[in-house]
Length: 327
Image 1 (cartoon, rainbow, N blue to C red):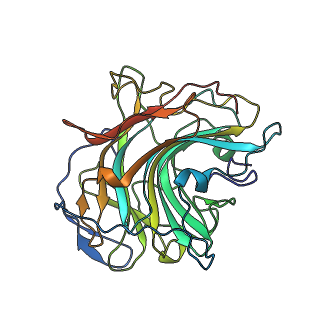
Image 2 (tube, rainbow, N blue to C red):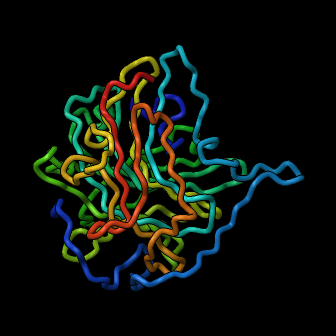
Image 3 (spheres, rainbow, N blue to C red):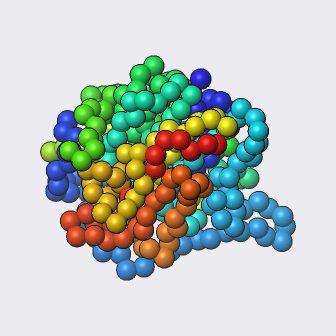
């Protein structure tokens, strides 16, 4: 079984490998096409909903409360640790980022590690989640290679669906990345930096959540999550490094296996870089820092540093931590 198939699952959060800058051509979505452009956004409407007098369940006071789950210390029970930056609940339409690719060759069958773009959508009293990113999951693939993956759940506290295991994510024919595909080579500590620039955003025409790869010659449409999997506002968007393992066992490394530090070399520390957000028209803009929150549930083991604007890196943060964390 995979980390998400054991009990609650993992949804509670949470070409060339070296990227090249690309222009902003017209890129087709699942049902139509529109122009991706980078445009300045001066203000963004943010809708925050909490409990009301009628007792209707709304978004929790903190994202940490929402994804905290029901850990049961002292039992062999799956858990997830994460290091992320996420938005406050609001009216958002997607994310784009360069995600560094790191292997974990010593990972065991009961462990998972990775990094992803996540969208959480309110749906009545619970939250649906869609996700795309890269992970190492020996229980799912029977190897320790890095794989591109997609995931969705109609209730983010429950086990959901990886890749193409059930109807949900729809890959395009001839996609540059197919769910489950091995991504190679990974980064090499102190030697080389490998990344893929990925986006997950709401198509302004169809309403589907489309996935693109942006580090090839031109943006490459990979597939989409149908609108029905994530149709309502408000949403929470997250850029997440994660690990999964059992309570009372040792956790795997997150990212490169090293904590962020003052140096933060791209060849040594895992990152999300050149982070952009999407508006309702499918145009990108810089994150509004007042809307962003950092979150690490085990800062003694795994951390993320400050989300900041850096020369040549855009909006960036580094994350990770070594193996050995005891759940």
